[in-house]
Length: 371
Image 1 (cartoon, rainbow, N blue to C red):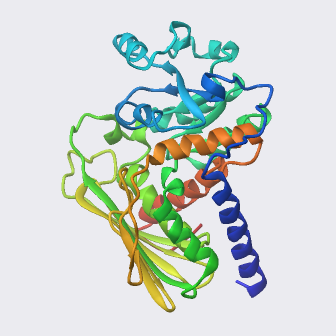
Image 2 (cartoon, rainbow, N blue to C red):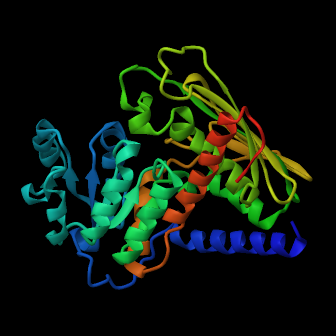
């Protein structure tokens, strides 16, 4: 790639990174709320969680206790038994409880400004589009969709209905992850030469939706491999141009529909490259970055309760924070001020392009595939 294009790419990354720094903390004098948003509890924006599975129950709902600019205003669930439990535990108004059949009526609810889609991957596009048409801003969990085409339809629907779309990339709000992004932007140790990213765990229940291709879209790659793709992209500050991928299986029955273990290598315009592994049948969680004049390491690299690591000989502080609270607060601030999210729909779409190229490489025997 010509040097002028490289410079432009890096300049754009620095601009995005700098803009993101301002979105991480809520100002004491927030901009006036847009006419379409409620003032909720003490001026906070109301969020409805769509889907009350493990992540909503154990991570997102508790995170509202630490949020400064938003609160849990409503829920959408297909399980009647959960309604009473959530209403009592979080003080949710009866009129702010919805199911999947009456979801469209959320349009007239002034308590709810944002909906957070926390459903199986196959439902992300449908409910993002339905929420956008109801006039609600949207946070959608990763991966944003099953395909690039679906992801683009989500972006288009939000744009057409004048609402904002953000993807649930909580690590962009973690201080130590942002240290890695800062190194890519400011280059104190020179250019990135090599990135190694690994995220894997041993999955349990063989009947769960994550192991059904029609619901998940894929296996470990779609679930936690996307962290590796994200890490390679933000550690280099570049978009990959080519990929090679290899797949391994040890349990053909359990993983008959989806990928179990996948490794891949990404090439970047500057000459940097990355090597990644994800799996549903091992445990690893690490990001290593080699620069011209040094190295950085995060391990674990994706943990909810704090990211540990070091840059050269400097051990990074681990400050107890709620990544999810910062993420939701960041989007609430974007909605209030009308400024783009630091993790917009377009960010999710870039990952989907890599994932599609990865699966194409697997299909053609692991040959180099352009992105």
